Amino acid sequence: MDFIKTYAEQITNSLDDLLTLDDVLELIEKPRFDDQGDLAFPCFTLAKQLRKSPVQIAQEIASKIDHPYFEKIEANGPYVNCFLNKSLASQKIFQTILKEKSHYGSLALGNGKTITIDFSSPNIAKPFSMGHLRSTVIGNALANIAEKCGYEAIRINHLGDWGTQFGKLIVAYKLWGNEELVKAQPIKELLSLYVKFHEEAESDPDLENEARKWFKWLEEGNSEAQNLWKWFRDESLHEFTKIYSLLNVHFDSYNGEAFYNDKMDDTIQLIKKKGLLTLSDGAQVVELKEYDFPPCLIMKKDGATLYATRDITAALYRKETYQFDKALYVVGQEQSLHFKQVFLVLEKMGYNWAKGMVHIPFGFILKDGKKMSTRKGKVVLLDEVIAEAIQMAKMNIEDKNPNLENKEEVAHMVGVGAIIFHDLKNERQNSVEFSLEEMIKFEGTTGPYVQYTHARACSILRKADNDHKYSVTSGLNDDYSWPVIKLLMEFTTVIEKSFVHYEPSQIAKYLLDLSKEFNKYYSHVKILSNESGMESRLALVEATTIILKEGLRLLGLKAPDEM
Ligand code: ARG
Image (cartoon, rainbow, N blue to C red; front, side):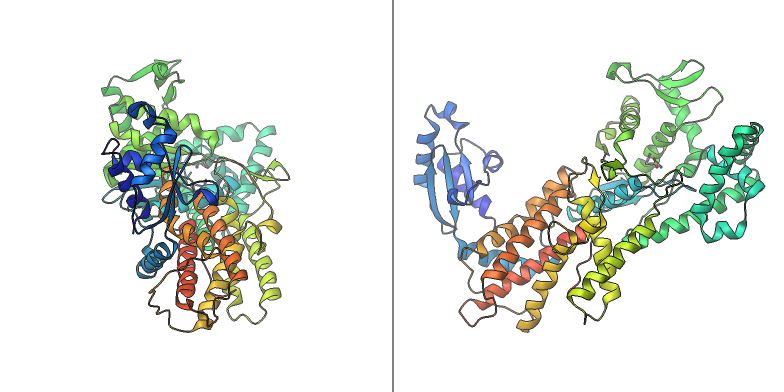
């Protein structure tokens, strides 16, 4: 069915194999304007080799190509423009999508390979920040996209569940804590204990010593300290899990920082054995001068290990456990230096596989242009934000479709979908302005708009009521269907691009385009009329529902059939 490939083959033949098929495929472009056709081949690069002008080359190639897939081949200056045979192309694409259903667009590039994705990774006893929300949403989409590309994706939540803050928390809890309160609202309560600790410590410096003592005990395995730590961890994790289930996100592993406590000695010995450990101001470091990077701290003067030591250990453990080909870390851009250092240390240790490790940074969430924070007093609790989005979605639904049966369920899909889509529709490095009013709208560039388009298409199919059994014996060749059909043909390429660039936004933008073109089609064409071609028109509608639903799924959104 591959029209592009056929075009590329024809060009390769016409050039007597002067270029390889892959070269030609690489060169083929999508023209910017409709009158330039559907595909274009630029002839500039050939000019030198052939000692002819690109214009002349274009004419020669155009005269040699002829195939039923193409309606017209035209030399236009230095380009060879190709106009696809609309009827044939649409017929083929409908048949393929209706047959493959949600599997359409699957790729083999990751077959037999594993990818680990470290994402979300909030810190125990601290609120789930907006940064963690972005990491969760982007990481989950990348995991879905990787699976669509054939990879086995391992979703890892590298919980921040270790560190000196636990000494402080234990002291604060023993002095002022209340079991019931912690159980009722763990994060809120633990946070306020933490804040109180710092307030009190200002006038009572002895508290800091107490905290250090308790953290040391914790590290040594003191059972009271261990039990409290475990309890804090369980309660916090329980609360995080509520957010994950609202967002419909799951993990294969919750092995966080603490998991590596008993594995770091080996790492340090290994680095030492490789002769990479040097002493600097009493601390053990790996020099990265040759890469123009500051040294990576491995062990402090007092023997304490660091964030980087844990990540190096985690990488070794994950390589051994999962044999990953790629390892992604979806973490804010403020940790770029940290990940560069970790990757370079592994490379210096001689691990070639470190080349498959990638830090995936992202921008901030802003509110009125300022960084939105979940810290210090003005805590925005994420589950409250999500609940509000669901409530607003419900009001919209009441308004548009008061008789809808499963309103609650649909409001949940739409409210959560709005938040996720709003995050993913922009390139991840950009910051996102957080506006519930904007993201929840049923029109414009929102998740609900795509979901609504999908539901609308589903309702046409319900009306047609023919059990979705079409014999697509012919295609369409009108002007309104063509932009939709062209987009349907592009789905696979979009998935591949979004994976290669780790950019879910490519899929989000594509879904907005497809929705827009489909809605145009819907408002100009009578789909259910008795005029000939109804089967093909319905095939277009059904193919669109399949792609919209699958695209939304990749981003982490549900697509209700009715809303
Ligand atoms: N817990 C860290 C934070 O909140 C993020 C951890 C990211 N993952 C990692 N392997 N370092 O900043």
